[in-house]
Image 1: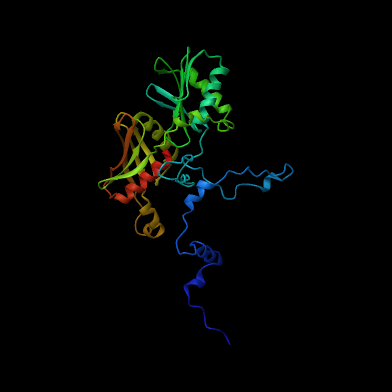
Image 2 (image 1 turned 30 degrees about the vertical axis):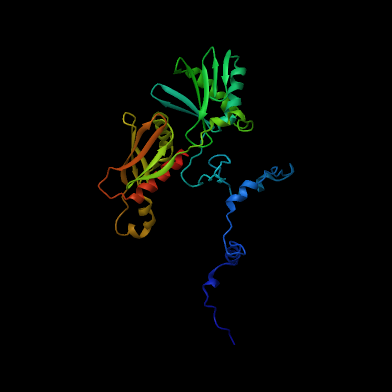
Length: 323
């Protein structure tokens, strides 16, 4: 004789899910905020596998994204740094990259200013430059041949390195710096200066709503923001019919793109039976709001609708390229 079939919705849940649900709440019924556990965390030495292992059998099964920023315990309590999204359009990049806007030029190094500063001092020593002053708090090395400097880049974990003479970039010096940092990409983040940690700005770009419009607030001047946005869009907005960079206009700090909103991509196959999805033409416009404040807007330049939700989704993607 067969028993009665189970009618509870729980029968459709796998055992692992039931165990996870059971462990979410504490005995008093409240959910445990694991954010505070980070404050008591201690760093353990990395696991070292024996040299005799077969290296082809080991790889990253579940890669962990890098955290956007480092730990800073403030007066208002601890907040765990958010990880970078693995699938948000971030691209493989070089450790050292060149940026240029008009007559200005600099390097973007994929390491924090506290790690880059000792390398910058090492560059001055290795090239035999006549150092006249060195200011860790400002990230500046003055030499008779020129001025070397490092400061926080737009994206978390990045630094901007410059070599100027009488206020103008020196290409030969930048080339030498690019080779120097490129050769030390594996060790540049291994040694950090505690005194130079203050060079890393705590304020980061953020998505904000102003009235019915969504914007990205960038704590950087418009020239540097333009250079980074231009580079990232050329690398990422290359998918025809989904996201494309159509035109760059440095005169008014704008980009014209073609973008298919996520709201239409989600409808996918079924909508395609009736009509093909239509990307929107959008203008990404930068506006200066002060010496170290830039606003990024997304303006609909097509005849089709572009909702506030579509606007936010696009700006979130673009912002992810700049974090």
